[in-house]
Amino acid sequence: MVLHSYDDTPASAAGLRRADVITEIEGRKVGQAAEVYRIIDSAKVGSPIDFKIIRGDKPMTIKVKPDEFATRLRMAKEQREQKLKQKMDKLKQESLQDKASALPPDMQDKVH
Image (cartoon, rainbow, N blue to C red; front, side, top):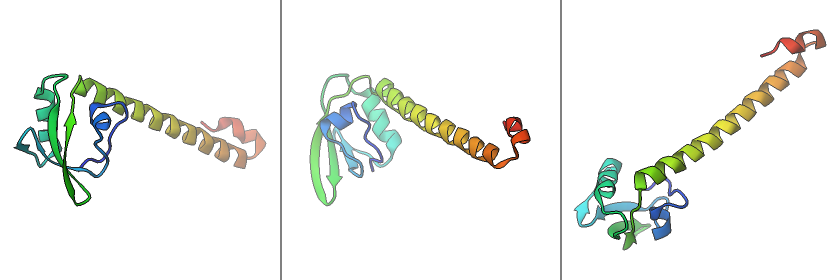
């Protein structure tokens, strides 16, 4: 099952969506994400490959044109992780400020 379709990737350009179930790629049955990645990584860049999927209860075939998939996926994941890190850092800073403001004034500068 597709858990996330990253923007600006061949999969999203082809119309692959979250919750689609990939059953076959180029006639080869797939059951695990690792199999999907192996097939895609071995595909010729720029040549469309057939994905048989189930969307809801409807079987369908979409064509995905691979590019430097691993690089693009890594970049998308890194961008997502960076955004999450920024949110966490902001929350930590806000939490420290809240703790510091609850202390007596002479102790507020000692909160790290």
